[in-house]
Length: 500
Image (cartoon, rainbow, N blue to C red; front, side, top):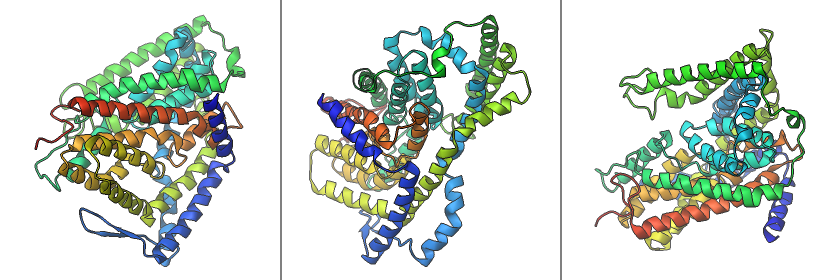
C-alpha cells in the first residue's frame, strides 16, 4: 500500500535522527550560531501595527553569555512540562503500584465493546484539554494500558490519545482557560482597529462543539483503519498474564475506592457550584479558578490517596513504605525525560531570546497579506501558515500574542471577524502539534512509547501521528469552509463576517 510505504520511509528517515536529547543539544548550538549570523546580517522585521523594529539578537555576545549563565537553571525549573508531569506521575505511580489501575481496567475496559474503545479514548483525550496538561501526563499512559489490557496494540492507544489531547487541543464541549486567554488577546488586537470590540471566551463555542464530534470521529477512523493495522500485532509481556476476573478482596477495595471517589466529587462540586465557592477565584468564576490551575495537583492527590485506600483494603500494601515505593518506581522511568527536558527548555529559551521566531512570523504575515485573497482562501491559508509555524514555536498563547495584533486587525479591515481569525489560528495551531519534536510534550510521548517499544524513535512517533495530522488539517479546514459558506455563528453573537 502506497500510504504504508510512505509512512515506512518517514519512520526510517525520522529514526535516523539522533536521540531527542542529542537533537535538542545540537539545535541549541545551531540557534546560537544562527543568532550571531542573523545579527551580523542585521536581520529584522517591522511590526505592521506598532511600527516597532524587531531585531535579531546575537546570543554569542556578552549579553547573550550573561543570559545563558544566569537563566539556564530557571529555564529548566520554570519549564511547564517538567513540574506538572513529575507531580502527576508520582500520584499515578501509587495507584499503579497498588494495583488500582489494573483492577479498574479489569472491571470496566475489558468488558467494553472493542469497536468503541478508540472512540472513547479519542473523545476523552479531546475533552481533557479543559484541564490543560492533564491529558499529556494522565490520559496518554492510561490509554496504552487500556489498549494492551483489551488485547490491542498499546502504541495505537498512545497514538489515539495523543491525537485527541494535542491534535484536537482546540476542540471541546466546555469553555476552558485557553478560550479565555486567546479571547483576551484577540480583544486587545481588535481594539487597534475597533476600540469597543470584545471577543468573549465563548466566541468559538458553537464551532468547538461540532469540532469535538468531527475530530473524535476522524481520530477514531484513522486509528482503526490506518494506524493500528500498520502497527500489527503486539506481544505482551507481564500485562498478558493479568487475570480478567476480580478477586473478592479486589472487589472490596474497588468499592472502598468508589466511595472515596464519590466523596471527592461531592467536595469538588461543593467548592465549585455555589457562588463564592471555595474553589472559585476572586472574581467568583471557574475558568481561571484554583480548580483549573491546580487540576494536576488534584488528580495526583486523588490518585495517590485512592491508590493507598485500594492497596490497604486489597492487601497489596502491607507496609507504610509501599506508597513511597510506588512514587519512586514511577519516577525511575522519568530519568531520560528529565535530561531531555533540560535541553528542550534551553532551546525554547534561546529561540525566544534570539527573536528569530518573531521575525519569521512577521515576514510570513506580510507575504500572506500580499496575496490579496478572498475570505475562504485567506482563512485556509492562515490555517496552513499557523500549522507550519507551529512546527517551530510551541506555545499557543505565545504565538497568538504575536499573531493576533497582526492578523486580527488585518482581517477585520477585510470584514472578517476576530472570532473567525482566532478559530482559523486554533485549527492550524492544533493539527501539527503531534508531528513536531519541538512541541514541549513530544518528549513525554517518546518516553511513554519506549515503555512498550525500546527501539522506537522520533521517526516512529512522527510516522504514526502523520495520518492524524493530515486528516485533522483537512477535515477541520473543510468544516470551517462549510461554516463560512453557510455563514453560521461561531459562538453566541459571533459570526464569520463583520457587518459593513
